[in-house]
Amino acid sequence: MSKTESIKPSTPRVASFPQNVEELCEALPHVTPHEGAGLLLLNDPADAAKALQTINPSVAAPILDELSVNDRDTIARAAPAAVGEQWQRNATYARGTIGRVMRPAFAVFQQGITIGDAVEQLRGLVKEFFITYAYVVDENRKLLGVVTMRELLFADRAASISSIMISKPYAVPASQRMEDTLDELVRMHLPVYPVVSDDGVLVGEVRGQSMFENQKMAISAQLGSSVGVGKEEKLTTSILTSLRLRHAWLQVNLLTAFIAGAVVSLFEGTIAQVVVLAAFLPVLAGQAGNTGAQALAVVIRAITLGDLKPGMTMRVLRKEMILGTLNGLFVGVVAGLVMFGYAILAGAEQSPVVLALVVLTAMVGSCLLSGLSGALIPIMLKRFGVDPATASSIFLTTCTDIAALGLLLILASIFVVSAT
Image (cartoon, rainbow, N blue to C red; front, side, top):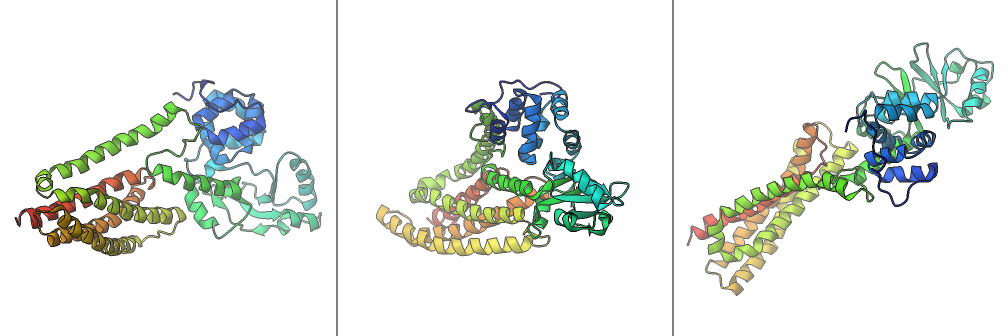
């Protein structure tokens, strides 16, 4: 839909229509951005503006993106001028960056102003906005320092505000990606962080709570992303929207399943001659899948937390291959013993010892390859600029199925069928 068109008010699907700003704030985080935009348009622009100022900026930004230019301007005009201008400024930054979730820095003062004059201006500002820090800038609005409220309270009112500022404060680049910023902020907990442009100009601020709430939502979405469920889907998302968000990945999964099925079809003769193998195909596929999923979970978590540093890739891959081999060996011994007993009870024509060794070897090999795949898939997706959590388990399932089923059937063809 063109952004110059209005969103139809019938879009949102919620349990009950929000009757006031509080209810609107409660509903917006639980619907898709498109549905949230529809909810805003069903409310007075002033109420819509208040709601957008109240909710997490990482929730508000995608909703604003869904509005037409005219509707967005209408709501922005109903907000305080500084807030409306900030929304327009935020939209110029790439999605996923700090610049998208900024709020205005209201308490901004030139370095030559006296503390008394600054306090007088703050008296008016605090009646409308929640202010944590004051910022000191030069004539080009470049950030020079930060002033805490405590320092303002006890300082000499005739002194310059620059005399009590914290010089060269930590500031977040507006163009920096959210996850990269959070990696740094783990070691530095502040209620508010100033945000600057690439040339050091103060362009806004971001609350620590907003960023960590955004990270919480991102982490909670990882499980769904890994199986093709978009992070924008909520419990209240309409059936048609959920179908649109999920179905494409199911088609991809179907295609990859056909690939695994094609591998099995190549060995129909082997399965027909060694019928006892059929009972162990799902066993190997399941064990290989779990091994790969464990490696996948660890690597994705490391990527999310910033623990996967440059140069660590080979070490991680080597570790997962060793773990896969050891786990495959221990599980394979048990599976081999079960195959030995099953072959005897089933009266298999082939040697139970050979069948047990085939299962053991296939289990070790498939777990090794699955561990490697589980670690490699998210690393490669990250390297190509793709979210490593996006449908990664679908590709992992294909790799593990091919490794487990293919290896078992190849070994059986060589050492069992050919030997007879």
